[in-house]
Amino acid sequence: MGESKWYDWHYFESSAPQASDSPLHPLLNSWDDLERRERALSIESGRPFLLRPDFSPDIDVLQYFGNPTFRRLAPLTRKSYALSLRELLSYLESQSVDWRLMSSDHVLDYENWRRRDQENDDRLASGATFSRELAAFRHFLKWATARDLVYVDLEVLKALRPSNARAHDVKWLAPEAYALWRNVGMRGYGRNGLADAKFRGRNKTRNASFTEVMWRSGLRLREAGTLLLPEVPSRPLPGRFLAESRVGDAVAKGPGRKFWLERAGVAAAEAYKRTARALSVAHAQAQGRYAHLTGLMIIERISKRGHIEYRDESGNRGKVSLDNLDAHSRERVFIESEGKLEPAMLWLTESGMPMKYASWQMVFYEADQRCARNGLEELSCSPHTLRHSFALKWLVVSLYILDQHFNITPEQREYYRKQFGDGYEFVQRLLGHRSSQTTRDIYLAPAKDLPIEILLRKDAKFHSPKDLMDVITGASPRVQGVPE
Image 1 (cartoon, rainbow, N blue to C red):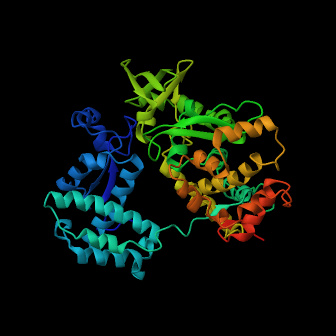
Image 2: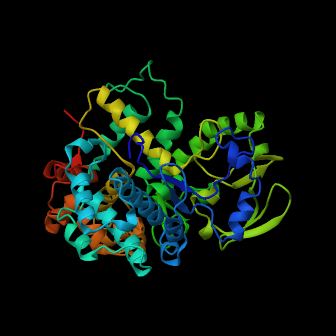
Image 3: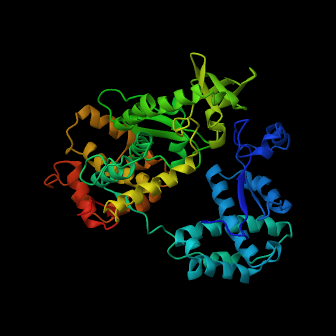
């Protein structure tokens, strides 16, 4: 939402793990039984909620976040809806309107302010963003209307849905463009390929490894950003390109699912664990940072079905499924080696603490800014850009794997044909989509208009997947190649 204004409502989530001596929350530290109180009220860890601009509670709004229809939403959807509702409530606050008294006219005014008001530059929303907000408002207003708290004609919301709701600003990166963006933005190289002595990015190994894992898995930000060490796949068997693991229900978009990570992505994660991550952990252990944490789940055993047997810092034992660990719970999961604790989450801050997955958005933004300072203004990347790019890359590769152009054995080709089906099915399964239309029309949009016979012709002058990717990059302005 940009810089906070006097009318802004505040977004919070219920108890994330805190160091007992944290200087950021002195009031919370005096409530040493906060988690017990929340459990007694059936408030799960990570539940979003909003407070008024003066930090006072609105009981009705808080009840909305506790109602079953909201709690049944996927974790990422709950957060998205809460943030969208914050925008609406903040706008109404700026107009001195109690949300219970809002009308359809207020919704229409909000739409104009959110989409077109030039005095609102820092908060203008795209068609795709506003469409998602409308879904959140509809959910909240339907609940509030049923309780006679407010009345807004829900047909107004339907009429306001932008015709350009699809995200036309979505982009893809060709492999060479991705490598350039990663090297300049994350690793601190110059455009000439040489290390920049002025670069002060202390987390470049971690950041570059994270982008490699995303580029080579197609995972969503939440999924990749909350991986636990036991969920990082081992290197694939000889002759196979992909290693298999699983995303848990509580951090996936929808049900948990299998995911596949390319061999080079596994190597990037392993390199980070051996180097930058190991240094962060060793420093935190030397500082005694983990000794002050409470509410831990220290892994003792993980069953083949994905159930963790754990103990807490006091020795009490429990059991939980990996599927039930949301982003906040994962910050509390630790492992013990040679009598020393360390977080089970893969990605850590420089101080050795679990990195919140939303923090990666700023890392990507800063990488874009660095590219711009190096004369690559048109080269940009977001976490979701990597997911789209993974899809397009593997469509190209799969057509070679499943046809005759790529240099693999007949046995390897038959393995992938049985495992994934045709090229489009292959990508759909890699992404975990339930709808093939989503895969084809959105994630593979740049290849959508290319006649399939061009992709599969035996006399086509495609000697490698790169040749076909070059054709797609040249045909679609939304696929970023290496800038000239």
